[in-house]
Image (cartoon, rainbow, N blue to C red):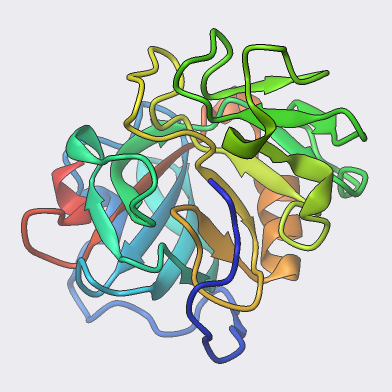
Length: 234
């Protein structure tokens, strides 16, 4: 999803592990969720309400049967807020809620030292196809295929700031439904709200990539504090 700036926000600051602890006696967020993907790593992207354009991304490790926070940062969401992923429509500038895997990482810049997840370098001919009429819908392509219009695709190298480092979010990825949305990533902040992705400060993105362990089967859960899109539903 094009990470163009739609709403101007104040600069996001990194929150260090251990800050803003949950209320005494409250289980950590992953322990209150219906599903965490079955692995021992989880990223939660939580907004205070469906119409919000900012919130918090936290990454967690499961150790000794308990979820432990590994890090946290301020996050940005779509300019039109968040919407249930199963009914989302392409081009609405909304971030899809739900629980998703993280198929691979990519970036204009080299992978941070210590990265073990699969990492694809962005090149001049790297595109993400968002053309609903293409056989390559919601896929990385090199080069852009003839049936995927440039106007309906992202030339990844054109977003050097946002796509310095990124993780693919598995929304509508494995069995794409045309028109539901394409190119939903966890990436570096631009200067405002996103067109549907989740974004974090550059240092947080590097930390997440170094932390991610494919053997731990990391997933990302996106949702709100309460209501129909509450993150605990996923």
